Amino acid sequence: MRAVNSDLEILLGLLELEELSEDSFLGHHPEKVMSRTFGGQLVAQGIVAASRTVGLNRPLHCVNAHFIRGGDVKAPIEYRVERHRDGRAIANRVVTGYQDDNEVFTMLAAFQDHGRGLEHSIDRPDVEDPETLPTLDDHFVGYEDVVPTFISALRPIDMRYANAPAWVMKGTGEQLAHNRVWMRADGALPDDPTIHAALLAYSSDTTILDSIITRHGLSWGHDRVLAATLNHSIWFHRPFRFDDWALYSTQSPVATGSRGLSTGHFFSHSGDLFATTVQEGVIRHYPRR
Image 1 (cartoon, rainbow, N blue to C red):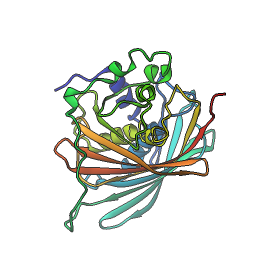
Image 2 (cartoon, rainbow, N blue to C red; image 1 turned 90 degrees about the horizontal axis):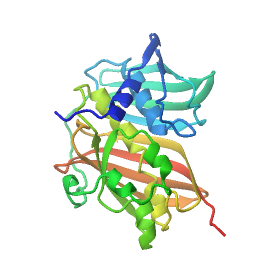
Image 3 (tube, rainbow, N blue to C red; image 1 turned 90 degrees about the vertical axis):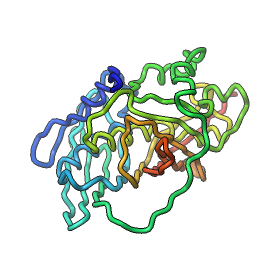
């Protein structure tokens, strides 16, 4: 068992939502925050809220989230769950996050029993083993003034870049159409599959937009880039544990109209594709003169 780091303990605490009523839950922010609520936190807490209204034997199949307002990091978020359907094999929930009766985000969550059927998937990219790669702290050395927000952020996930991160790549002049990062919770997790799904959702919002800017040779910190997530979807294909290594392979097929789209795939260390993500965000670049 790997020891749980303090930031992971904080995140697990954030997932222990307070029950206000049968279908209403209260979530809080950590002390380490950015200017607005981190989208991955909203989706992770929304998953927990929805799962509390569904039987334990019915796994999460997919979530589709839309971010409506930037959350106030000084105020809690009330998650209200609407039970749209409980069928034989499928359950549907809508989760809406509120602050002062203003909608912050809304998410459709679908739960479906696993059944037999056709099976195929794409192959995992061939990258170096995570244990041989530098830690995130290693990549921050010498860039403390470039990405201070990343350094001071909550870091409950052990991340190992299989390619150079954007702020390091900027110095090489390289343009990269994909990003590949090994991820796992920075410590052992309980067996509850809802917690593993919530941790994956949290992590899926960390690097997915990177491929939009690295495709143009840009970087957070070095360049004046504004990014805000509009929507985020995740499909869960197979059971998994997120305290085991997973490769998050992302790429951006299109950017236009001040928006960029990125897709991602989570692969197990053994090569199984177990989750797919799609995120759209506002991306604006203001060249320095």
